[in-house]
Image (cartoon, one colour):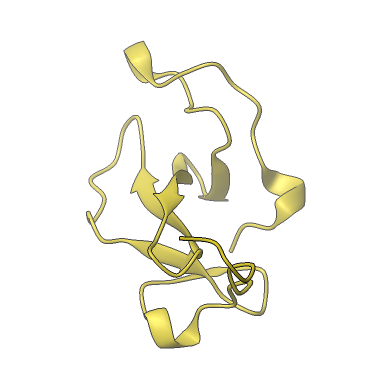
Length: 83
């Protein structure tokens, strides 16, 4: 599974370009930041320029990888007073 060190710096996903902030998890398969959920946990979606991928929201786990199971996510709590 990808780690922070595997984060790819790129400009976009047009024409097969690797999306900005993508984390490579295997050959030509990446986790792409998708936003922040209502509890402040960063979400990711899988992306590949050449392979079929599942469209499921993933979260960072406590081991530096990813999980689709929200209960296994290693999220930082939202600061007090944040909507």
